[in-house]
Image (cartoon, rainbow, N blue to C red; front, side):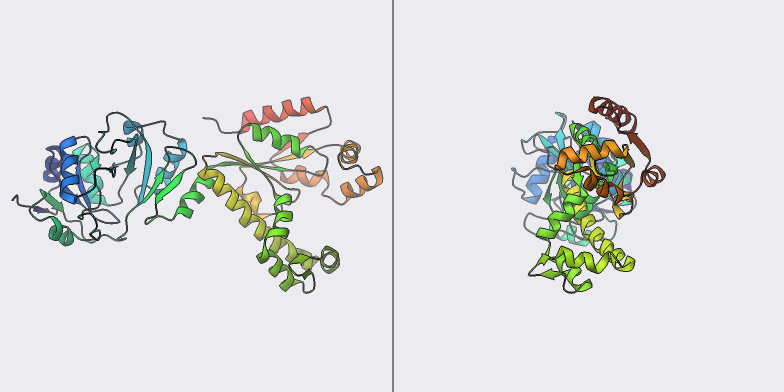
Length: 403
């Protein structure tokens, strides 16, 4: 039986052992890992044997930084590097399509490999000194609790592995979260120390979000259609509000609590609500706070879902976008404007109403100067649709991220 060394400072010794194909337990911010040279089939076989791990279960590779993605993986989506920039070093394992230099035994015969950058200074330094990736599942026999101290590792594997790097107790004591980004939609394969919601939020924050606003009949729908052709998720915030009126008991409850008598059997009594708020600026502001909060929550959910499906672009359409919290989510806001008579003609043709009613709608909305003051870009839509589409796409070519 070999002697298992306890290493506290001699990382060069640990690096030498790993390069020679020996197994060394290493600390991370979650639990201790049982590390071997991830490019050495014999070392990886020894990990499976010592742990009693089924050969059908693949191993992940510990790496020192995000540059390893291009070294060991192919078809790496930019979102993977964005998550690494956000959460590495940290408890996130990212699964990607493996290059052929990653041994089949690591992949358990599959096409993918998980990469993990541990948030522990000793192991990060060891990775740099060894200059190779570590195949490193948790340092426990399969089925036993994952170890949080070097002493627990020694109890499991004393005499069976070459060394244990004693980096003190692990702080989290829970394995990393595993996220499969080798295909879309992205999937959490194992919920660990990093919450799935935090991953989805980070992906959504990394998307480019374009705001589109303007009055009725201005041409916002045409602008959104061109964004959709570029892969954007188009969200009509006003439509979201009307959906929530039908589907959200929480919204109905909050409206009823703030404006008693305006909801009956879960149904909004629009005339009663209108009477309660439209002559009272404070009441109207309260209603807007309620609706904006619920709309923002639902839009955020849809953005997360789109991001987890690999989406990189979204568009938010709302007449009152500028006044809502969602304006802060937009990389830039396009104001689509058109002359009053042109807008009225479009509304009349679209909705089958008369000119006077169309003008009443226009007059009830924000004036053009409001959009000119608050939007990042103004698009005039007073010509034919083909010209407007040409202008939209010119703007999008200039403003959207590429690659």
